[in-house]
Structure formats: C-alpha cells, structure tokens
Length: 152
Length: 178
Image (cartoon, rainbow over all chains, first blue to last red; front, top):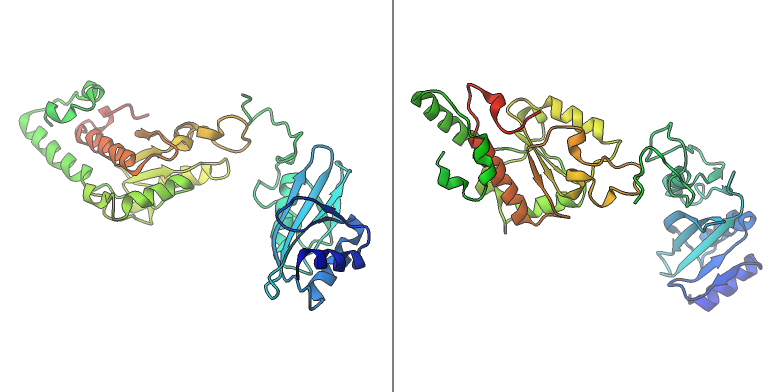
C-alpha cells in the first residue's frame, strides 16, 4: 500500500494526525491519547498488518519530549513512523505498546533510562543500561553531570 | 639481547639494567625468549578496536606468526590482556577482576584511543573511564582510532622487546611497572 493510501487509512482512524513532510518514511504525529488504539488497529487490520516494530526511541526536542515508533509490515512491506510528543518534562507519560509488540519492553526500558519517559502499564519499567541508583536522565538536553563530564 | 635489536626504540635501553653472572644471563635469555614469543591473550574486546584486533588475527595480517597462537578464554591461562575498546564505568570492575585473576607474568596492552585516554569520549561523556590505566597498570599503549592491524603488530613487538628485558632474579626492575 503506498503512502497516500496509508495516510488516508490512518486519518480514518485518528483524524487529527499530522504528517511531517520530507521524511524517508510516512511520518505522522499522533496525539498521545490515541496512540494505543491506533497501534492495535495497525497491527490487527489485515491490509495494514504492521507486525514489526523495528525501532522505538525517545527524542528530546529542546522543549518537548517525544517517542518515535518505526513500524514495518513483513507481509505488505510498507513502513510508517509514528511520533507522540509531550510538553511535560517533569513527569512525561505515554501508553506502552508492549502488549502489541513485545520488543517494546526493552526499548521502552531504554527510553526510560535515557530520558525519564514513563510508560503506563509497562510490566517491568526499570533502568537497563545504567546502574539502578543512577540519578538523572543522560540523553536529555539539559543533563548536567559535574562529576563525570569534562567540559570542552 | 643485542643492542642492534633496539634500533627502533632507544628509550628501552634505559631500562636495561640486568646484573648477574653469565649463567644467569643465558637462563634469562632463554626464559625471556620463550615468554615473549608465546604471549597468549585473554579473549577481551569491547568495541571497534576489537574488530580491528580480529582483523589483525585473520589471514592477511596474522598475529599467530608472532606467537599469539590462541586466545585463552580463562584469565588463569592467559598472559596478556589486550584492552581493545572503550571501558565504561560499568565495565571497569569487571576488567579489574579479570586482571586480578590472571597469574604472573601478565601484561596489558591498551589498544586504541579509548583505552589509552578515553579517546573521543574524553569530553562530554558521563560514563567512560578516561583511560584504562586508571584501573589496571598498562605496559604498552597503542594509539589510533582504531589502530591499523600493523600498528597492533608493532605494539605486540614492543611488548616482546619489553619482555626480553626481564630478568628472573629481579622481575620488578623491568619497565615502570606500578
């Protein structure tokens, strides 16, 4: 299915998705509340059938925090990228997609470890790379570490 | 060991302070020849320098002809640990434990910029150890990011020269071992 048809199908499910132009794959910004419902429909609908979440990562846009999902369909061979953003930097929260694509368990743990983004209903949300008692979220743009980082 | 063989490395002649009689010297020569021509490393590679080390061990630049015949998986049986790759704060105690488990005589080669000084991660990294000599004492430093296989071979030859300077009566006199 090509990008225009994909976009039309997704706009039927979530009418207020916005496309980001000039990206490699069809990239849509969806409201955080609609993410889980959209993800379920993307996986289960037979002519969409996005069964492979090949990347889930957090992004810090300076003021907003976001999570980016890269999806692929192994049957139909089409790709799509979903983004969800939040302005809340103190307590960012999104819904987990572990129950849909199990690989998200580890990817969401990494996003929590590096950005502090919590995922609701995640079975085991804890740090994956850093030590359990590490303070701070290193990949945020405003991360300051007096002890370890040597300033240039 | 003849002075001619140290043509490339004048500074090592400063360390050459062996004493003892002629019999000791020839025993030293045999033992050092044996030890330097069969350093067996521990399987240890953390990042990109590890790939370069594997390339050095493959067919084109073969380090088995220098005596590095096999990699020993157990630190008890290894002679040298080639720290090839970045060491992070989480890996540093593991590295120290492996080094402590190796039995004497043991040597350390710090391969690549990350192991020498933290390399490209010296500034602005929250988790990289700035040089593996903060954790274990190093014998040979090989700069490069990553060093070419020929550079690793030169570093191995340096280590062989360093081993050939050792004497069994006073093993602590070699190099600047800490």
